[in-house]
Image 1 (tube, one colour):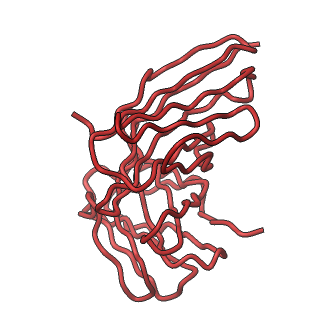
Image 2 (cartoon, chains in turn cyan, red; image 1 turned 90 degrees about the vertical axis):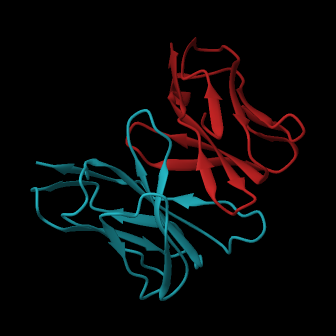
Length: 114
Length: 108
């Protein structure tokens, strides 16, 4: 079955360390997104990519980096520059943004900085 | 003021009750999504609407474009419906804007 796989489900990181969250999809979707979810807030967009080898900053990109070397994969690196990285991270994908297409979401990664 | 507002924030119901969750938005949109997030965190897309009404099993979603309002109804609610329900709009800027969610608990 097609879908999005995020790994790991839970991740612990020491302050000052970079960490990479994985997002893989086998839906042949062009666009992929990373969102951050904090308690009491709506999901906020970190980065998105509409095509391989291209990506754009979202609303809260500072302290994060991404790459899109393959259509199927959109890893997110949380760098030591991110001041408050403890959060729930969700990856999503969709067909091209023009038109009305549904989104598919992954099961998320909960990152805790210790 | 948030561009997407949901009400109520929290909702408790007895099994079998009819449930309504509301979503109001203030931007121009091309589509509205209703999403379900279970305690584990994963999100499932329930509906995508651009007009009118859609039904899937016990779930019904409606949208009024002129009033910038959508509702999600659950008929004959069940404890397995307990989850956070999130409204998200696809703005005319192509950006997806999320509400903060409605936490629903259905007791037997």
